[in-house]
Image 1 (cartoon, one colour):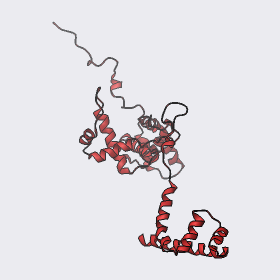
Image 2 (spheres, helix red, strand yellow; image 1 turned 180 degrees about the vertical axis):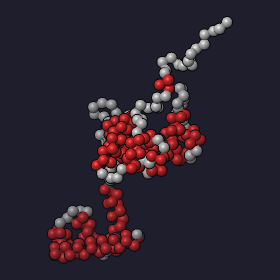
Image 3 (cartoon, rainbow, N blue to C red; image 1 turned 135 degrees about the vertical axis):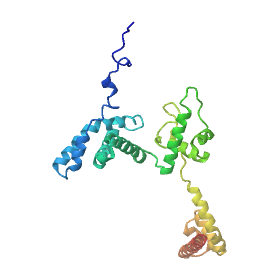
Image 4 (tube, helix red, strand yellow; image 1 turned 135 degrees about the horizontal axis):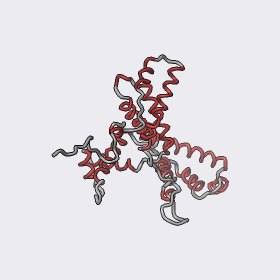
Length: 279
């Protein structure tokens, strides 16, 4: 008994032969003929106009690639401008004999956006090697935590996953926190009068310099005659005037002034000479 046979192959509901043959992305126009024509044109207005037409035709693709990097601290508009710059480079460097333009343009545009993040978006500049460690550690951590309920991987887990040493993983983890910086005015505790990050930072202590200067002058002071040491003590530690010192010692104020100047010069010269010799 004859049976009815389907006149066409079964297909998934909602699909058509046209949909099956559609390009992977609607923003990949067929511009092979335009690129072939561009390759034959010499520099001039006609070539510039055709070049601009090609850039405009492929600009939606560049915007799509830029959208992959949203929510990384850079505005979408700026990312689109960077991607457009990469597209222009791709158009200028493309050779039709290499194959489809899309296969050449996508990595070119993507690389331009990644280079923008690498060179312009780091608030704290880190070496290229550390940036690469950061990328490997970030990818490994994402892979290890992609399953629901996965625990945060340890440094040892990340090292085993990436093939890096634990020290290298540590450097990569530190770089993960270096992409953006925290304002010194950021409050460390909730509340209007909470301490800020700047409140926790130390500052140079001038007392250390005083200690170094005293130690440097100690030997020179010991070599001075007793009267000169007494004069310097009265002048700089007891805060006596030159007139009072002169009255106590029974000498003129001018003599006191000369002794102070000569003694200070001698101690200074010995201290600087000893420091220079130590260096």
